[in-house]
Length: 204
Image (cartoon, rainbow, N blue to C red; front, side, top):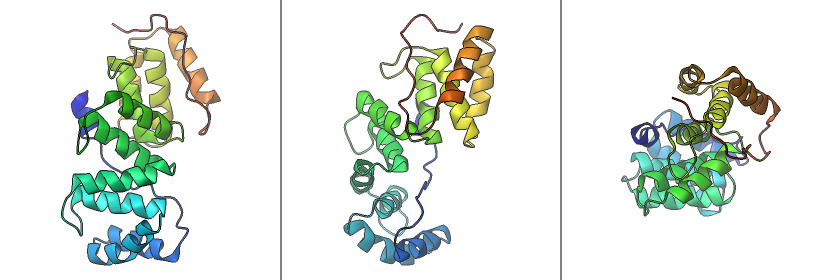
């Protein structure tokens, strides 16, 4: 499970560009013209634009257009995460989970994953589902919450969430599946993530 989370792909997840230079920077990045991307993105990041901060953090994380520097990657992603950008919140959570450039802290990882998942970020929802499924990072084993989170992530196009949901469903009762599906149907981004008074919800 740790390998699954550690190797989850980082997605751009950018909001609609609010400044002209951001659109050009994103296009240049997608075309792998990293020098042009850096020229457009860095000034915006330095003025506090969260999308630009996130993309600059990604460039440092991947070593695209700049030397790979995980500390700088964390710095820029953290700035964007503090502004509530869900893709950046997810990356910060992943870096705390793996201890990449920061001291490993599973409680902080869960906290950041929750923030991103609560805004509908599918990778964060998938990660939390794994944590509930395998009783990781202090979260209880809970098949219902894992199914619900994977149901949400699958609806947003996450490639692995549907497979995980199908696998765990084979180990759940009909009542558990119905509860998880009801929770998924009734939840919308921005609402608190569901919690359950903890009773046994483990799978064999």
